Length: 402
Image (tube, rainbow, N blue to C red; front, side, top):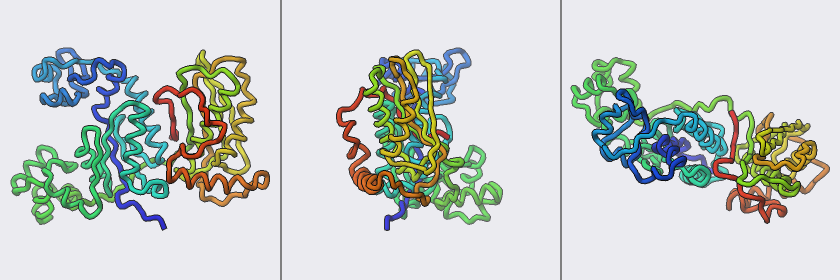
């Protein structure tokens, strides 16, 4: 029997997200102190690079003060549209690992990865894979905290910064938590801190050792109970990931348009293979299969078909996708974006009628999945893909849509 993860909750926080997105747009900003925000007299810092933070610059600081502390800082006006686009790509990566994603802002989220225990040995392996995908696909840094609950995972990601990983191992929660300043607890603002300080409470451990009635007298019964629960490392809240994935897809934008039928077909097959891996990793199969093509003139065409029995294997997805592709006349136009998606999802464990048309497929697919689970998704690929089509541009991969 596969062992459950002891620390199934990740908190992923993109490091200096606005700054790093600006650096993608302007490489001359790399390695320099950068401040994103309004440059006027009333401007406020929205984000600061770690180079600027070394001078005491931080978000929500008046820009005048930021310039005083770091005169050499490069001030960049915010590009919110660009941040939103990149944020979507980041969350697509999150959801390609698990549908249980609770976004907190454009650049951070909680992930429940308990369902990946069949594919990864530890949650650390999951976290490293997520960080690796974000780095390889988007060229962005991310820090990840790993713990048994959301509160501890959030604290762990703060310890992981910048661009790192920190795990609070099960059984060591209080050793990690109690030396921390009590200000690190959620809900401890200036007024609450002053009240706790009057009791001699400065660390989380001090608070945990203080009788509840004394804490409640100072901060109120509801706040007191809340803080004491946190001080003992308890946080029962689940990751609120919505109703789950409505569809899962694999698509890419290509640096050079695909023109020949052969190149387009191979790209579709590649996406069927990736989609199969994502469906099986997340425990889904789909009844509605969709193929999407976007041409060089940005015209987009989609074709869908709903099949009688939900499918998730590459060969079955390819049968449907190839038939859909045959219904699209690209007329020699170059294809800049191509994708394959599965909707109308059901649990992969649901009973389904086995195919009598291709009796060996299920066994072969299961064997291939065992190899992929051990050696990675690219360990087994269809023979037709050995000589791969042109590489997609960075950031083109998409996971589940919510």
